[in-house]
Length: 279
Image 1 (cartoon, rainbow, N blue to C red):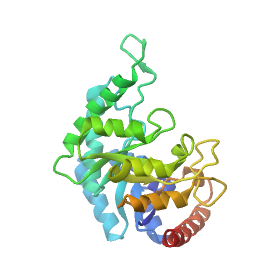
Image 2 (cartoon, rainbow, N blue to C red):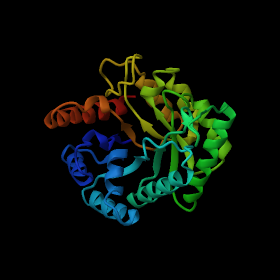
Image 3 (tube, one colour):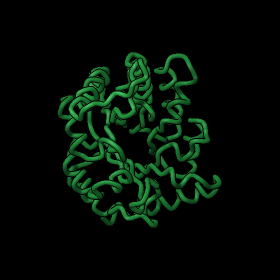
């Protein structure tokens, strides 16, 4: 597994400057974040051409994006169905052009849905599963003939467990649908990463690695004051043959000057290179 840090670590930089920052600090892999995805989309024009140009720039600098995070705030089951589909297909086309293989997405818990009359609508668990599956089939069909997988992430509220995600995956029945493990989110629910990973098995295609101390979703880098069992994480990943990047999603580490960010990256790179060798 290659150690990576998601690109929002440098969210204040343009996509190209972010690539150069990772290159400068010895990182060759990253997850393309929602922020940088929007920067690329908002350039206008053909998203496929935008993605191809960005991939060419990143490739020339030996920085690669095998994983990306799709539209972060998307409510895939929102009433504005056609607009959601159009925007999501643009995101998928951008990611395909960028060479991304595993695209992380949140399911929609369908809470706080308001109808055209301003009335809050309540859905049963079965209805939530069915409506998510319906939208995901559309997105997966768009990917037929490609090598991209949409990876459903475990969340803090709704779709917290691997079982809930697998229920959606099994309902959709499409090889372009898999799972992303967020270790910080899991540490606020069942705290058993080994069970999550082994249950997901070969459907686990993406990772959001970070730590917390059971209190809040702190998304800190590992080996600090948090208590996620990363030894168990790595052992289970190897058991199931996980083939993706070991990607750190650590917004809790961004509030510092650029020079200190770079110093943290040096620690992350050297510590995880060592850790992944000894486990």
